[in-house]
Image (cartoon, rainbow, N blue to C red; front, side):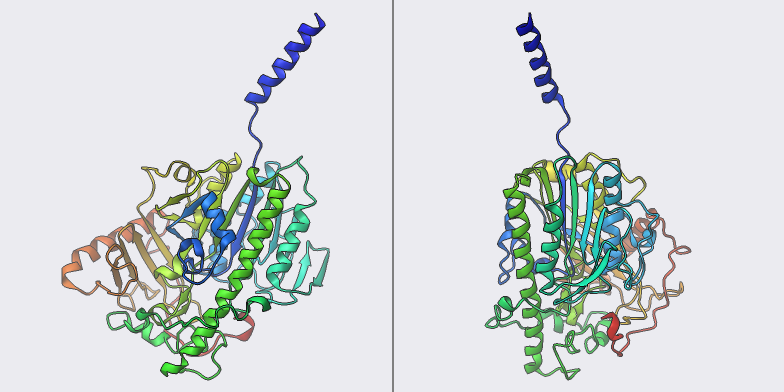
Amino acid sequence: MHRYLRTLVLLSASLGALHAAPARPNILYILCDDIRTAAVGAYGSAHVKTPHIDRLAAEGVRFANAFCTTSLCSPSRASLFTGLYAHKHGVRDNFTELPASLPQWPARLRDSGYATAYVGKWHMGEDNDAPRPGFDWFVTHKGQGKYFDTEWNLNGQKREVIPGYYTTVVTDLALDWLKKQTPAKPWVMALGHKAPHSFYTPEPKYAKTFDSVRIPYPATAFQLDDKPAWMKQRINTWHGIYGPLFEWRKKFPDARPEAVVDFENMVRGYWGTILSVDDSVGRLRAYLEQTGQLDNTVIVFLGDNGLLEGEHGMVDKRTAHEPSIRIPLIVRSPALARGRVVTKQVLTCDLAPSLLELAGAPPLGKIDGASWVKLARTGSDPAWRSAWFYEYNYEKQFPYTPNVRALRTDRWKYIRYPHGDGSPDRHLAELYDLSADPDETRNLAALPQHAATVAELRAMLAKTIAAAGLTPETDKMPLDAGIGTELPDAKIR
């Protein structure tokens, strides 16, 4: 009888284990600042070798068409956390705090029983390094931080200058926290890299890696005759190829052909910082593997926005052109496919609902994003979007980019530049057939044969914006005061 009862107990326990909910996955969120898809091996970089990032792509899902909805650090970071467009979360520039009252996916996971930490560049609230809501452990710094010897606020307990290279230090800080976690609770580690944001300063071991690589200005830098005039006006500014190039060029503007060497040095520095990021990814993955946590961890590698590197005569971001809005997004998870490439258009505001679904946590509610989990699992979703809109507001601190409202479909991109006061647009519109012209070399907007397409896309843009809660009456934007030639304040560069 005792043996019979014992058998029943063991059988019941086994059946219970079979039907128990699977363990909730940990989440490792690795965010880079200003990283171009063209500078990642898995996205086709010819020169920047990123084996650890590429391995995540080989073992997980790579999103070939991931985009930010505002190509600027703080607005995009806020969209990643909240699932909202910038006009809804209110972070329109790099100086505005993310409202603590807004629901965010890390806080939702904390409420669901996760241990949560943020370590690294926060960059929403330029002069505030205090801990933010939703995190058990919060380590950041004021402003941009420095590539060497940054002063950190360690969870509000003390401020300390930690000697060393930023990418290495932030990885050490992340691993320190991970090593204190126990199997009793799943965890979220959100790591915010400074790299590869300007001013591009590689780790010494990578400082000369690309010295032998010749890097000409892109061909599109000189294909501006059919483009709006503001693009030519920008070419000599802080955000143009003949300008100071984030201080890599000391005397400017300089349009001499031989001055391309300054551009080459800037790009080499940028590439060098990414090599250290790849090392960091390798260290983090190795720790998860060594501790048996790799196959119960969702690893997300992504950027907050893209970056222009000479395309259309421009550097930096903010515009609606492809290098500015494209971001790398790679997700490794045992719950998703292995080695899949998703070609549907996914957005920064899709990340929050996707991570919450993967964690089995309650959704955020009324947001702009949608979960891409079905896409990542099956490769298809008939209900997925085929068009979306991009928004950017003119900044008086960086007066080199107009107000932008743009529509991107699977085939077309239409860009308009509202003046900001309801009057006719200040600048010529742009229209590109991305299927035939992915590099946006030929602006079709003014051609009579494309007038019907322009009218259709402009109407679709207005409808898409209105569906997101904006109308001509409510879409408030600053007045476009024109392209400025002055340098931005040194404190905010």
